[in-house]
Amino acid sequence: MDFYQQTLMDHYRYPRNRGTLEGADFKSGLYNPSCGDKVSMEGCVQDGVLIKVMFEGTGCVISQATASLLTELVLGKSIEDIVALDNEFLHTILGMELGPIRFKCALLPLQALQEGVARYMQSRSNNTCSTTQNLCEPSNK
Image (tube, rainbow, N blue to C red; front, side, top):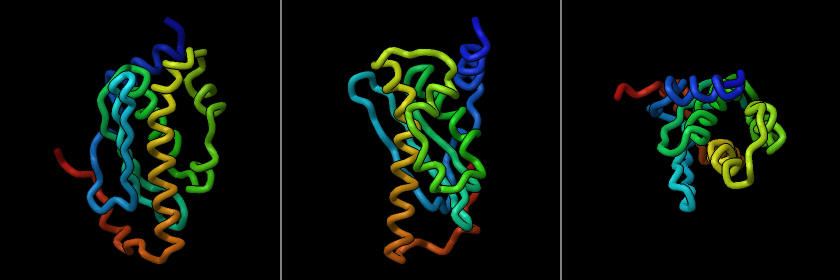
């Protein structure tokens, strides 16, 4: 097993940032009906930077491990940088080639995160965003 496969298996077995956030600034979830993968993302933004992010989900090793890995990599990034992440970014962090169907599994967490961030940005531009950023805390499950 190569380094990238080991990393994905580690994130699948011991997911980082799994759970929910109280008072999250955004929440978004996606479902892939063709394979059954589900991923939801929640995050807290302060001064345009993602300061907390958590995920929940079910599905294959690739979707769940990518969600875990992604939460570590985007923490501390600006929301503009997160929106700009693309397929090439995923190819880089995965470090291996995936077929088109398996790549959709890896893409699901990024799409869920970007959808949530986009909603957050839209709500800010409409001045309807909550100002309870300090209430954003991990829930105990």
